[in-house]
Length: 293
Image (cartoon, rainbow, N blue to C red; front, side, top):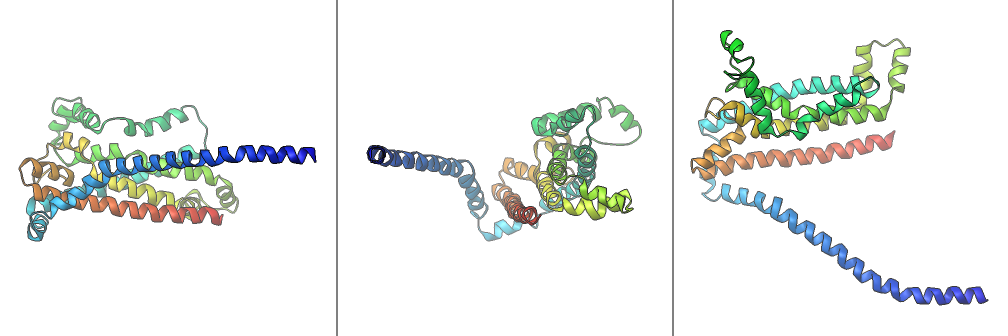
């Protein structure tokens, strides 16, 4: 009886404190939510909304006229070409690196992973400058390349190399965790049953990482088509020749052709929205796949 009375008194004495603490916790929670909402609105939502408003500020006709202009079409075509070259090359590299690193322990493994992640920490402008110092007319390999009639800087090869550099980690960093999580049991079983390394890769390894690979491809492609800094340094931003879509936006804005600049920015923003939708779809399917196993 004494113990039950003591517990009852303690519960009654704690009740007012919990009731007093709840409003304080709610206030802090809503304050944090409000701060996050205001921060996102000022940094992302309002600037993005302003792009759409300015794009249609001169009317629908002016907005649509941008998409039929020759400089814009050239910029879109060059952007697609750069992405079509750089993304498959980085896919091959990313898959090869992830497979080589995932299930093997060797000296320098951590260093190799750090080198793959290096483009994440280097400014794209610095990356472009490094390419200029190597392949420019006064660079290490520039004179040899010029003697052979090969032009890298201020041409498509330099733009592709810059894009490959900045997008290099995306495939490898998405596929590597999936390979490590899956382990080697299924691959070893395939080898035991007589499957060749290529058969094992195509029928066992690749299907098990397909969602991670597609996720990496989407991110890699979005970055390749939206890259500005590194490409601006190595391209020279020559209209109709070495001008990608992000460079077109800057050039049109500098030339006071603001509606064209905002119209091109709307296209890049739509690419970002599509990327987010596909990202959500792939993450959901990847989650269902993991729960199924």
